[in-house]
Each structure stands twice: as structure tokens, then as C-alpha cells.
Length: 122
Image 1 (cartoon, rainbow, N blue to C red):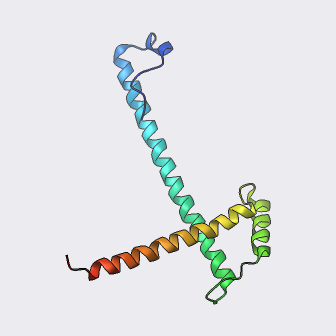
Image 2: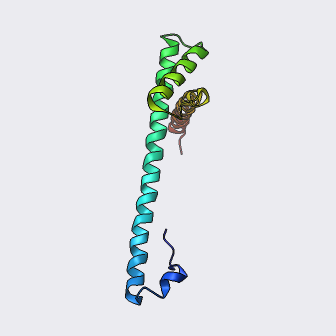
Image 3: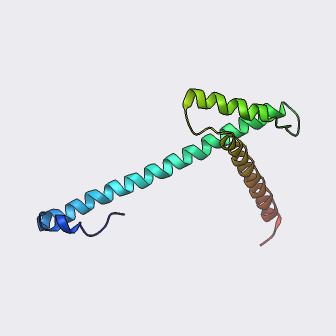
């Protein structure tokens, strides 16, 4: 949230009636920024999960377990870096798989807990 006070150098310049108006505008902007940060964060988590899911599916090719070849991670890292720029190191590509595993595990656990709770008579 925006500060209730204006910087000292502005206090002498801004009329009393304008001070509250300026603070309200700053609060609107602060709230908009916070919303934008949360939205971008949500989109990034979803994107990383989708990428990890695709890597796992590609590596498994119908098998129950993947035999992760570093060649896929290295190749994807180089390709994405070449076409999209920084941010696609091999470590970051591996993190996509980690995000996917984490979310998948979380939903499995939630399903199990929900199933157990539904069997309990309260």
C-alpha cells in the first residue's frame, strides 16, 4: 500500500486538499502493481508446469517412467536460448520438471486426503 505521508520535499509544495488525493492515486497504483505481480506469478507457474509436463510426456513416450536423457535438456536449453534469449539454462529447464512433479504430487495428495475424509463419519 502507498504511504500515508508524502516525502518532506513535497509537503511544502502540495496544497492540503491535494495531499489526500495524491495518496489515493498512489494507493490505486500500488494495488494495481500488486495485482499485476500476482497475475504474472500465476501465469509463470502455469507455464512452467505445462513445460515440465510436456518434457515428462516426451521423455516417457508411453512408459511408466522416464529415462531422462541430458541431451533433451541440453538441446531444449540451447534452442530456447537461441530463439528467446536468457532464462533457459539447463538448470531452469530441469526446474520445469520439478515444478510439474511438485504440482502433480500435491494434487495426488489432495485427492487421497479428500477420499479419506469423505470416508470418515463426523
